[in-house]
Length: 196
Image (cartoon, rainbow, N blue to C red; front, side, top):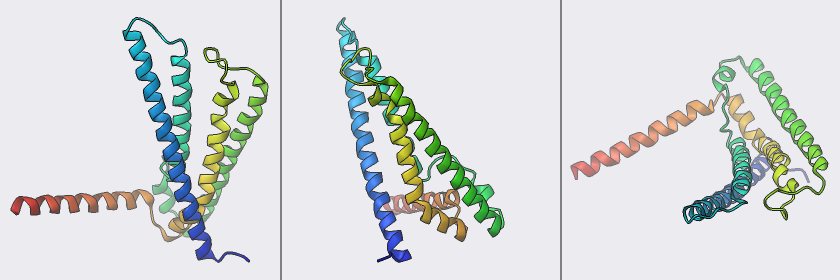
């Protein structure tokens, strides 16, 4: 039984919400872990000792946080773009440009993800220098994992972005209007409190 268009959209929104929550939770967990590692390293250094593994582990955690954050930004369509150009094109040119951009972005992410996965085979049984029980693939795995997540993010948000493109809903303009309305509401609340 095929999903109707509206049901398909609801499924994609649910997938987007779950993926967003999972990425946020995992990224926050890594951020807390990175904070603990850095504080531990600073504490040991202050006490006159130093942890041999702290720099390497902190760098790996930062790489994972950065790339998972990039996947989250892709899911929220928050990467830098040129939507002003897209939304000033005629409808046929806008549709063509949208399609070309999607093919280039998804194709590039897929190609780089595949290449980074292929490179992992060259590491074999190598491990981190200061933490020999952590395999090098745990470090290098950030690229294929995050790029795969970016492709998934691009695909699950495709229908919403296509609808916005078709309807001429520039996300930058929409965000500006939302922020102006929020600021005006805050100003109104503030003025009412001052009067009362």
